[in-house]
Length: 276
Image: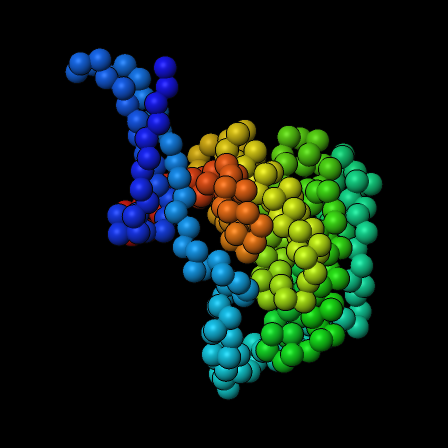
């Protein structure tokens, strides 16, 4: 037979967070069955629009004022300079070509690969910040083109890695973190179709391969590797950028919850209670 149970998610009992519930079956005093189920309670107020990662829409003016404080001038001026240099020297159009990269002897292609998945996302981020702080439309457009170019790719993983059973690589955390913030900062300049393209890429190129590599295949069994913090954390950042934009949080499961669990395992092992 089967049975169901309704668990009212009262905010006072279940504030936003990740929960694990255990279900057990007993024959008199003997436990004869059991299992666990995980559910995520999302704070809908954090998903009501964009931006949302660094600050929300109502905090935009305060964020800009903080960034423009005199003590932050060296950082802001450096970011502006790098953003402008990227626009002058780099093309934001990045056609998919890493399928031509070698599956043997990958080092000769490493710098071109890093340029595509790390350097250019960083350039997009710098320009998205320039748009936010200085209202520079040229910066916003440059960031938008890089975002959409890379999100049209079927994968961000080097063929050398794929050939060896790795569906995601450390440097893709640069892709994840930077493009997540770009999407969040220029969201209102994207069309509905462009937003769907980005959301699909975050799931296809980040969440799913991170889940398959670190959960299904468990390729970092010691849970101490900083790759877990980078890759799982990057995938979670990208997921939080798009969470609730199309459907509820279930649309990203089980990949989102799986990345949370792997990151928690890393924290438990690498940051124990010894204050190290």
